[in-house]
Amino acid sequence: MTSINISYSNAQLRCLAESASLQLGLPLINIDNADKPDSQNSLKSTDYSLHFSLDGLSLVSNTKNSHGAIRCDFAAGPNRHRRNFGGGNGQMIAKAVGVSGKFYPLVLDLTAGMGADSFILASLGCRLKLLERNPIVYRLLQDGLSRAATAGRDEPALAEIIDRIKLLEGDSSTHLKGLQAIDYPDIIYLDPMFPTRKKSAQVKKDMQALHSIVGADEDADILLEKALSKAKYRVVVKRPAYSEFLANTKPSYSLEGKSTRYDIFALQKIPK
Ligand SMILES: C[S@@+](CC[C@H](N)C(=O)[O-])C[C@H]1O[C@@H](n2cnc3c(N)ncnc32)[C@H](O)[C@@H]1O
Image 1 (cartoon, rainbow, N blue to C red):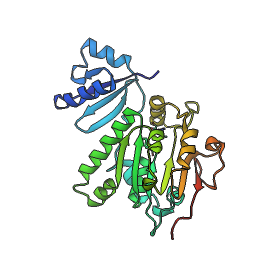
Image 2 (spheres, protein in one colour):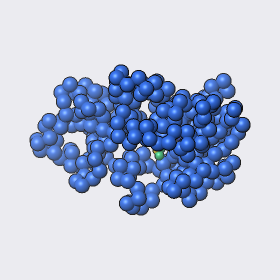
Image 3 (spheres, rainbow, N blue to C red):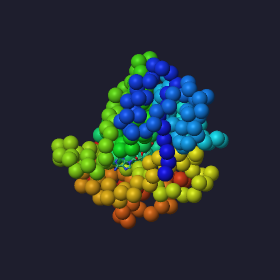
Image 4 (tube, helix red, strand yellow):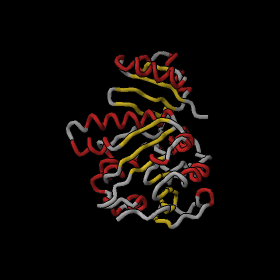
């Protein structure tokens, strides 16, 4: 089982780190004391640290030669690049949810993860409601959104995108159960963690890290069944190419890419 501690590197962050440590029931380490034997032992004996620094929250591997720190960054890096050069409404994900110049759906993302897919959809004009149940992933995403909102003070276009995203912590099955007809979203989006392939070079190290923390989403079949009765227009499922259908249920049609496939369950015609 993957072990995690909470660490911080600046006294200003102590309160935040302490409260996360209490809420998550994980041990707390002050990195400034990392040369002390006690701290060294705790660092070595845990696989990961959820690390508070003045640059934001990140997940850091305590194993040598592992991946770099994992964090959500919407103002820079791959998320920014894809927002600017990803291909707009021509991207597979955009076609899958049906976003167009005339249709900007409200999308309920049942499996938020690090928020990359939702950020693309929000940057295309969709409104997003995200649910994440893993408390570590939820905190990383919450921190990324909050830093992006701060960066948005100097970049109104980014601020507008972040304004369209609402993140909730919790289990999507429970959320769907309590959803009243008046609140049904236009589109429900699902990208569950796929059962592990072997630690191949094909699976990036940071994805392997997230996988080891979240595990496989074994209840994804049930989530799809519930989603099908709660979306207005479509349920969209993201899967690795060549994988079987979720819940063994054939979609209306699929969009196939090199490594990813979108299965689309069409429930009603999208307004033109
Ligand atoms: C493969 S990741 C999603 C990646 C995401 N699409 C992105 O772009 O970053 C799957 C995530 O869904 C979350 N998840 C799976 N089932 C869930 C459920 N029933 N309720 C809430 N979150 C769930 C997992 O904890 C995990 O973080």
